[in-house]
Amino acid sequence: MSEMISWLRSTIEGDKAAARTLPHGPWHREGVYPQEISNAEAIVIAATYTNPSFPPDIADHIIRHDPQDTIARCESELALLDKVDEAGRGLKEALAEEDKMDVLLFTAALGAFMLAAKALAKGRRHRPGFNPEWVAE
Image 1 (spheres, rainbow, N blue to C red):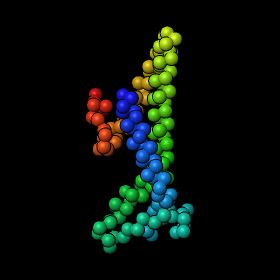
Image 2 (image 1 turned 45 degrees about the vertical axis):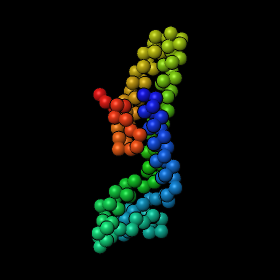
Image 3 (image 1 turned 180 degrees about the horizontal axis):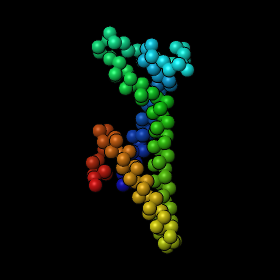
Image 4 (image 1 turned 60 degrees about the horizontal axis):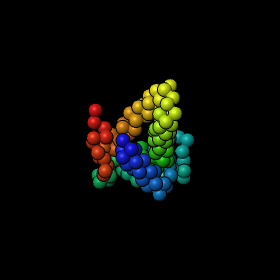
C-alpha cells in the first residue's frame, strides 16, 4: 500500500502545484456573478451561448474546479495522507513496544485512513500510474 500512498501523494501534489500556477478566483462565467462579487473581482471564464466550441456547461465545469478550490481540496487530501503515515508509524512503535492496546487502536485507525485513501485513489483511476489492484476488494 505504500506504493499507492506515494503515487497518490505525488498526484495530489502535482494537482496542487498546477492549480497554484493559475489566477485565483473566484471564477465565474461572463455575465454570471454572485451578488457579493463585482465584475472587477472575478476571474471571468469567457463563454457565451453563441460560441458552440465552448458552451456554458463546459465553462460551468471549469468554474467548479477554480484553483482556490482545487488547492483547498488538495491540502485536505494531503492532510488525510499524513494521517495514514502517522497511524502507520504509531502501529510500528506499538508493535515494537508490544503495547497491545495501542496496536489495536493504531490498527483500527490505519484501516480507516486506508479506506479513505483507497477512495481518493479510486477517484483518480484514470490518471497515469494508477494500479487497479490498489482498490480491488
